[in-house]
Amino acid sequence: MATATATPAGTRSKKPAGTYSNKRQVRRNTLIGWSFLLPNFLGFALLTLVPVVATFGIAFTEWDSYSTPEFLGLDNFERLLTDNNFRTALLNTLYYAAGHIPITLAVSLGLALLLNRKLRGVNFFRTAAFFPYITSIVAVAVVWNMLFNPSQGPVNQLLTGLGIDNPPGWTSSPQWAMPAVIITSVWRDMGYYMILFLAGLQTVPPELYEAAKMDGANAWQRFRNVTLPSLRPTTFFVLMMLTIGSFKVFDLIVVMTDGGPGRSTLVLSQLIYREGIVNGRFGYSSAISLVLFVLVLGVSILQYRRNQKLEA
Image (tube, rainbow, N blue to C red; front, side, top):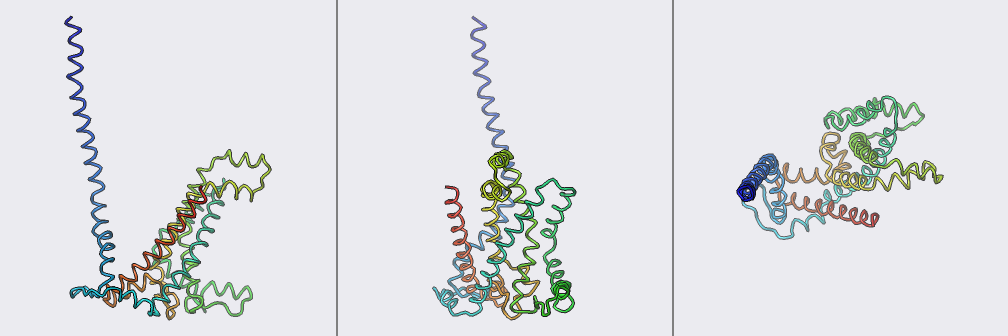
């Protein structure tokens, strides 16, 4: 009788202690997790979230950061309709995005397919392709400006050697400045997106390629019917990142051409900087920022819906 009554009593005495200990451990782990997240979250909230939210209000005012903001209603947005600088910057931004996004996507995917094979020294080539992405943007811009020098640059010397009598003026030409920026940007970014595609290729089951070979599919058919559908999540992510990066390009253009010659490479991000930081027109600058935000959001939603249809 004594044994029968002692066991249940011992069990009842241990259960609350174990539950309390587990709750204490969970609370401790939660606090440790928040201690890691909180500094980054506070920095994001103070330096990114608050300015972004404030932009929605400042866009409807006239404010030079010294005086009290004056409410203007939709005047800043009406001014955009007649502003030649805004129209030029918008067209140049679309021009840059239309060139940078598809070329970078195609080149990075081609590099990933090439370096996904068992080649000798493949790790070296992967590192070499990724290296431009971690290189200083100033160094990249200076080196490519030297390469694109119209009279003494190696690029035009090569084109002249190939028999082209009048090679492009590149960054000194209003017609060729934007293509020069796009080429430089593609060269810098392709290594990063190549790594993403390489990671995606590692997840494609080899059995799919073996089954396609047994069905008589050639290399192109295997790429089209096995590789591309398997890479759809990676391609969607790369496309989104490229779209956002292309519409907010700033540093490369500022260092390489500063928006010139004339306004041939002036983009929306640079116009926002000029109007807000240089000229002190933060209300008008915020209105341009909102237009850029809506533009990126609209393109992103279209891409998301297209991806949903392809997966359906």
